[in-house]
Image 1 (cartoon, rainbow, N blue to C red):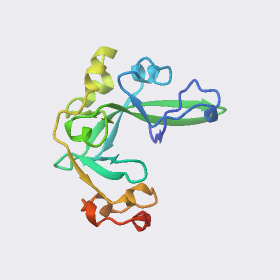
Image 2: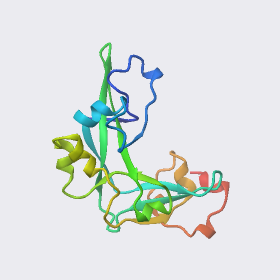
Image 3: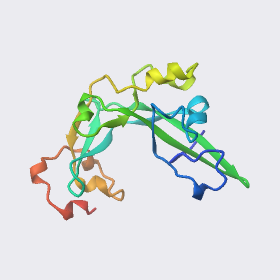
Image 4: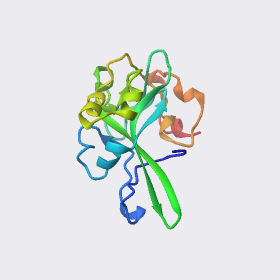
Length: 180
């Protein structure tokens, strides 16, 4: 499978506009839900990253945090993929699995992506059964680092290395932080 779009579109969907396209799925229930069940059993993938963002606070004043390994090395998330086809058109899509938050993330959010421990990637892709796969979908036991970042990450048009930098929350101002 080559390029995948975010938001799982199941192969059985008759009209892609009539089906939700979730960007994440609860690992605990994905094997039971029709939207994810077949992909969980047959179409697992690795989604590579070096960090993710979560927001802490009340609506309207949420502060983004970047969560990464202390060594900033990349790692793999447990994901699911599917290919929707109709009239010669094929669209490959994916979703990321989530689990309960570990101790670092729990202070910010109650869920986190399933981060596979180094060496578990092959087991995720080739797992023999649902029970074995479910054991991999646990809160990441390794070290993670969480730190506040600019609210500029809220705008997808902003794409620069300084968005990875830790900020002093007291110095962050209001609406101008959303600009590019």
